[in-house]
Image 1: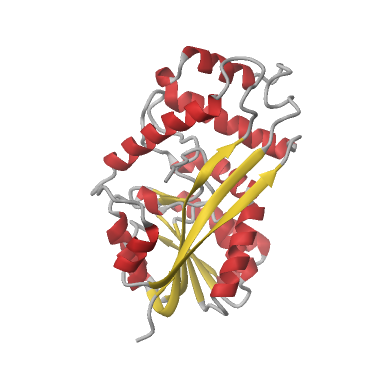
Image 2: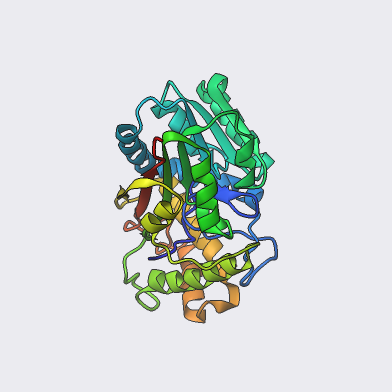
Amino acid sequence: MAHHPQEPHGDRAGRGHAHGHGHAPAPAHRHGHGDGTDIDWAEMAPHLEAQAELFTPLYERALSWLGKEVTEPGLIVDVGSGPGVVSCLFAETFPGARVVAADGSAPLLERALRRADRLGYGDRFGTLAGELPDALGELDYPADLLWAGRSLHHLGDQRAALAAFAERLAPGGTLAIMEGGLPTRFLPRDLGFGRPGLEARLDALQEEWFARMRAELPGSVGETEDWSALLAAAGLTHARARTFLLDLPAPASDRARAYVAATLARLRDVHGDALDPADRAALDRLLDPRDEAGVQRRADVFVLAAHTVHTAVRPVQ
């Protein structure tokens, strides 16, 4: 089971928060450089939005699949919604549903509301700010679909969080979590300079960062990431899983290149001195907009990602 902090989405989670696209994207943090794991989500907002917008085809396929599993939901809750890009996709996909974006960051929820208003969903779109999962107790009625998009791993006790999510479902309601998949890839293994396999080495650093981030969460509990078993332990049944692909082939669009550059820059900044000097030099070259071998100019930049969605249902009693 791999963790991929380089991929946020437009959702998120943390101490009362919840993020969303991949274990924190090349996470930003508050302390400057090195191995800090304290993520400033408000600062991350533009990157979260840009990634979620770029990954929209993947989310549309995932939501289309959910639409076959969940028919005519009355209430959809996006747990760890961040700036609300995916929340608004739910509003578009399920025109008869009320959507609530729940998050621990008020500034991100303000962005979500503005997006919903701009897209014409404001009359059936609400927000819920507070520590997650406890804040879900403030919902007016149970959810027919509760979505946690790459946000669960930002809550210390994932088993307890899943139980809390399950309690907020209506009988017959569905819990859907996006966790796992494969590391996102942007570049060929051999760049033509530096040592081949740069992204694989960045993955290893990200795994170490993710383990530290998890350990530092309040109430952190180690857990085997057998999601179907954890969903069953929460009292849910009919567990299913499906993986969705984002394939943006080379040559990448300007928007994709901007996302790749922003992600690699965050990786370089976050991992600081932990980077091999040769790999840091390679990243510097990739991020130089004047360099023909940089991501802004080279013809072989792409975006390839695979995210897995796990679902289960609250029994009707």
